[in-house]
Length: 278
Length: 362
Image 1 (cartoon, each protein chain N blue to C red):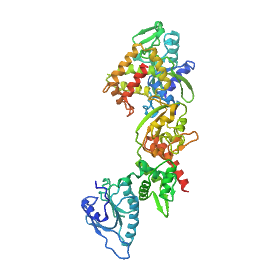
Image 2: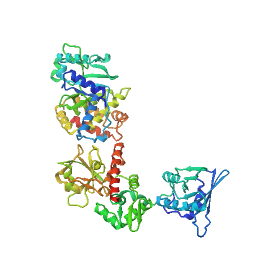
Image 3: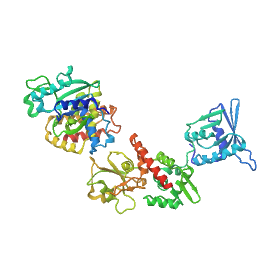
Image 4: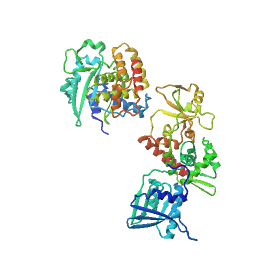
């Protein structure tokens, strides 16, 4: 089976960066890769595989840049050159944060993101959600403020298009769940409910395929960030959107065509709280 | 629905008259008792079917039950009467479902029931068929449940040993494979299997004659074992060690993997779900397992289901490592009621069962 355009794009990018670039993939594509990886590995998960929602991929790649890279002008310039070399064109509605190109007749978008900047904050300029190194303008990253711990022990997995292969990184369940809770909270009242449905299903997916190792990492991260306002906000979101019927998070999850018929919403709320609180 | 009392052949003309022809009021049906002739095969009825200006006469044999065996006998007899009388054959039974009507159509024999279903065949001239009316004369309970729950151990025993000399030999064979069934239950199940033409009894031999059809019967009537209680456990060390310890010094297994969890023992492919096992008493398993497991709700290795149903323990198979698997029949039945992928695996196991049965028969 030929590789999908998203995999081809990540492999192209890794090769153009000299190989071994340790690209970190979040979003729907990151979850998709993680699902395939966990399925294949036979790792024990919170729910048996037969109860997971069917794996789904997306049109875009959420490429997480490490905070130290976003703070480094030379690194960001190099990355921009590579995107240009690969034929990526900046997206007009999200200039310098999103780039697109055509792969086999399909438009592939790279969305550049960065988690909390921590010690690198002072080396960057920030305008609303945009973050860039001081003194450059060719490439920006979107600040994912909810993604605390995104750089902590990401999961390493292999991707391949048949001829080439590379290792990429996928965030742990803890930051993934925080990002998805934030995204769901932001999109819950959208007129178009599809985004909210996808985020709700992704939360269910993250919990369903939680491994024991990730559960252990989540405990460490929960302890480390217990005072962070992101944690408090996430707990409120769980209470508001999942803890009791008929909350909107539950409704969005049920509305998703890939939601398993036996999805237990109370179980989801409890496990999300356990993951975030530690 | 009529009571469980079987109808008698004498009641049939009145019942049919009250019901009318299955094919609607345009068709008239009249039954008259066959005039008996000494020294000739005598049918039960002459049936006259009138449709507009056309009239068709049939010679009919009637049975008070609708089992495959009763239909077999009726067909055999009515063909003989048909040949002697020079009239097309017809059978009359309490109920004809789609499958039975299909069979009559294939055999070119007409048939009517007492529920409003029927097929009339006069080759090249007439073909009427009416089906879908519900059964108003269901068979009595003990017969119905021959292929379900504890009684189903009897038909299952025939798939492991297709020939027996006596009822007591069947009972002994069941006991040898970890089952326990009363002699009366064996006899009742046997009667039903003979009626369904799955087993033949002749000259002190009881022989399975249709293994595939028997598996179908078991599948159609299968219900998963009832769950009295369940726990999820994290096993310290290999699961084989827990199963071995739980089943130590016992002829009949106390803890056995479910049919679904036993799939990879009988067919290729892995069903990667969490393992599940049946037991008769969780309390007993807890005592025997000691420190070999800890109860947990998260990241469990094994779910243990307590059930009073003994069928999952029948014909369990142990491997060298001490893992006790559900029987191939249990694996087949559980997977056959699952999703598409499970059904594919069930088909592979079905092939294995039928091959083993064929080997045992030869």
